[in-house]
Image (cartoon, rainbow, N blue to C red):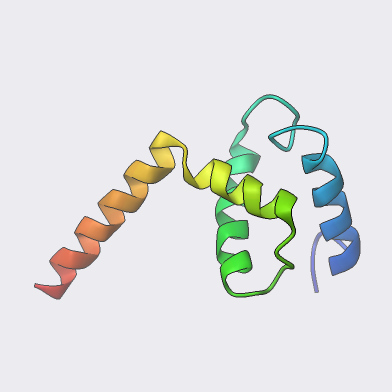
Length: 84
């Protein structure tokens, strides 16, 4: 079950919106982009969603934001400390 309806409708809506602009709400980044962008990076990586160019570009755009890069660096440091 999905709160977004069926998978194909959700994916079509997402792709359609991202074809209009770089972010879900157009030209402006929102917290929804951070949620969806990071989730898409995972789901694309695991093959859950098809590797459509618009989705791949969006996931990369979000992943390359300075704050997201910094969080990834902090996670790597934390994981390395867990191994010690």
